[in-house]
Length: 254
Image (cartoon, rainbow, N blue to C red; front, side, top):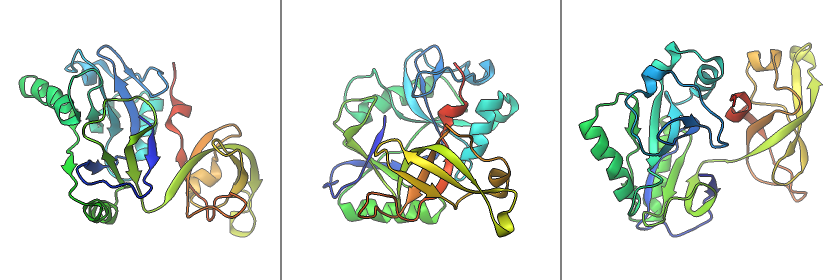
């Protein structure tokens, strides 16, 4: 499930939930995989009470902890998995609308206790104002944004106009093509990244959003990263781009 940006659609009657800033994962009934079908090597004790049917969601441990989740997955740190929950937003092969599909999982969990699987609460939207009030609430609490879904849309593993994300800023992904050295207080460290947006193929520079650790050990050339920006210039370049994170699939192994 890849999310499209909200573009003034009428959201009345849709469902909304927090957008969890984690690592996308799909349990197919036998194994845990990334959205690109790479195996995620979760410990057997973490997976032992999972259902024999598919569930789709985000591996998440808390707001602002994306880097921690990525490090646990890429380092195969079994102990770290104790803190990770599987936040489920859909049950791909179940029948009915979204609420019906999620109810299949809730019924399973009512009979099979599981401390790691959580069904994401879906809240009915009465008006677009409801959605933006909820967005303000989530963001003020340190959340990333919200997701709105057409309750009656079938499950789709890909971009869909029936599932939209609402944020206070726009974001996209780009490939690192060059590293530039820093100056002044950043001398000897990363100054900025030269990147090419993977959707528009536009080249631009990102010079902010990096931690001290990331400036000391910056993303390598060829790495896909996520960045946020305010809007686009008349030349289609992102205005005020800020580094957010390295894409999680860079670190997953087959």
